Length: 345
Ligand code: COA
Image 1 (cartoon, rainbow, N blue to C red):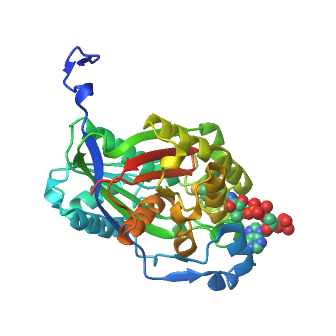
Image 2: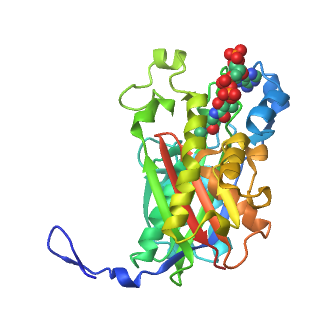
Image 3: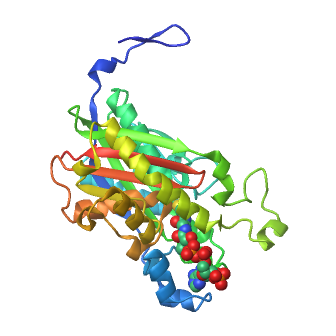
């Protein structure tokens, strides 16, 4: 089917012959420094029992002041390309999902592109907070499935520990720093990314956000004194939003692929909170053995969380040819995004 574009050119994409788009390589990078719940007990009025029972988090990784999102992202990208056996010069697009880029502009994707030597690649950042990697994977799959691009590098990275208020015990316990990356390449139709659902509800802007530092509220001394350059979160609202919405989003994405929850071999959710993961899995009646969890060791790593989980699950040999993997992210915006993948080696 030829689609007529606005300027009258025939769009050459033949929608009846879409390719598949699969994850060919995965990589991750976390800082060496571990911050345990016991360490947090020395910073704020909290305790290990409270944190573990409310979130499932036992420790998280934290950057030193000189380490930037790009540093983690570059290493994760190198690891993913090596895992995919693809040279940086063969990458067509570097897509970086982050809320903690080195600069407001230009993009962190351009920094990655230059550092890894992806000299033929385009590069841009994508802003969808904790949903960012899932948005990025859907976008990359679209480019590959239409034949517009061959090798797309999708990176999810965040260093949110640089934006937490270390006096706010309800948020500073939650977040960790990390990067994860995936290389997306063509495959047989019916394998790889089978379906994606992306969504947003901008009316929830203030549920989890950072008010200052953009153009609307510049970074004045007053804003800094009031911690407006730090994460502000209505935790209970975010919790309810996730538990109410995410099961439906997973089911809708599966339905788009002609599948049901019975077909899921692996549920790889955004690792925000163990209680959210359990609530979603219980609602969908997905057994614990199919649910991947690493929130206990890394906390909520925002855009890095899903690729970090995919990389670890893959590294543990969990994914077999033909397995159905449901991934889902959710977070600030509010945003959410899910992808259903048929694993293809
Ligand atoms: N240690 C000890 N006590 C704490 C605490 C901490 N780290 N943080 C909060 N508390 C206290 C509160 O002050 C409150 O005390 P009070 O009753 O005396 O006022 C009590 O614990 C209950 O607080 P509440 O905020 O109702 O806890 P909760 O059960 O809702 O759990 C979250 C808080 C943040 C763990 C939970 O709301 C949550 O997980 N939300 C989702 C957050 C998320 O995933 N965000 C990122 C999305 S991408």
